[in-house]
Amino acid sequence: MIGTISTRPLFSALGIGLLALASSAATAQNMVSVKGSTLNMREGPGTNTPVLWELKKGYPLQITQRKGNWVKVSDFEGDSGWVLRSLTGNTPHHIVKSKVANIRSGPGTQHRIVGKASYGDLVRTREKRADWVRVEREEGVGGWIAKQLLWGW
Image (cartoon, rainbow, N blue to C red; front, side, top):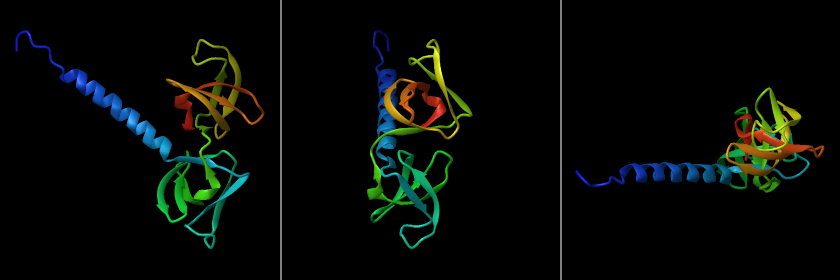
């Protein structure tokens, strides 16, 4: 078609962008964190089932199934179990999933390194910018970590 501008690529790009945004929002809605000081991860949805392990305050979990007041969750390593939904909260946290993660003074590799975090470290999510997350450690040390080195919300 001579003289006609195709809007198809624009709509495709817009659709992909909206799909990614919706996927990100859906993931966040399926994420919870441990509300109290500790939480028992159980084999099944009930207090009569064996405790698999304990999780500490802030630990992020992804909801994969619901059954009454219980939710089946998985962690950053893919381990799963059941927790009582009322013992989880909406405070975003991340877990470091790389061997070592640099904590930087700003959101980018051009910023100086102010600390390091190790595999399995729990950090409180404070802000998100593109591919970076501003975090705070339990000891109060904070900074920015590349999102690809973290799991959570």
